[in-house]
Image 1 (spheres, rainbow, N blue to C red):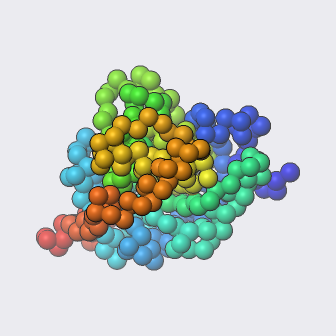
Image 2: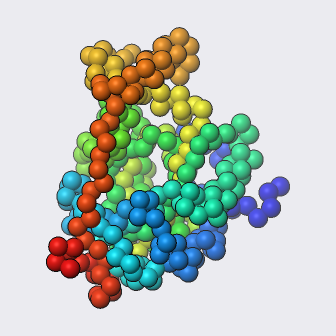
Length: 311
């Protein structure tokens, strides 16, 4: 039996359903020392600029292209939290295990527990991000390529998970993500919500869903702290290879792919195709410069932001 497990309400059926249906499960990371206010404040103060995004999202429904990128402005961690709580800002601390080895150790512990609870589960790669977002913040309808779960630490949010089938998700959607790296350009209709699984996540709860399942997230009227996990198993890696190859065939070569098989001659042909073409001008993504920061969190007005050109 696991000693002091991270997942606190795991049942045998959770292993059987993993990856085949959305599952809301309990965890104890909301009480973990690495997610205390003190730990997060000190982490914010020394987080490398290249590994975080701070985004001002403006009014609900504003286009993603209009989002503004900012910077911390040398604030203390406590003042960063005040700025998030009092404005329309979310922070994404990417690659936390690479920045601080303690989060790497925690990540390893989580996946060791997964492997113990699900014999045969083996993540070839995995990473963790930490999200700090303002009251009312919204993550728009999108899908992700890796296996993914969302862990609530502080605050409450509502998560809508949609079936990973047409019309909610078409092959062209995931192929476009694989080729462009942009997850949030998927079409969405309000009636999709009638077919979504809807979950209110409380601190100490996590949600895992099917591979590539579209989802969107609305914060309740409170500051939120969450953790995201992303991982690739061999099965997911093979799916990604097929997705890239099919995207090349459809959008670059004018062929309509008829199979998403992750084994056999078709798979290996596509594996060779996407590997041969991935660094050519036909497929290689253009290097996108990081969006220039246009604001900073304001040290003179707790909970406010200041335009850099007016600072």
